[in-house]
Image (cartoon, rainbow, N blue to C red; front, side, top):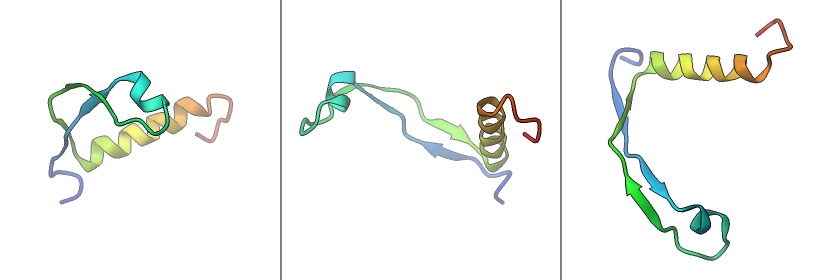
Length: 60
């Protein structure tokens, strides 16, 4: 089910210089634990982001 089954994403961190400089390979700064979420948490996070971005608009 969309809202009850958990999904995981591998999280890897890169150095700032390797991301902002063009034509340079990404340099890993570390690997973190997997990020787990489900459909409900994803929908809630998107809604909270929209509400936080449009604070002056009451429809959000």
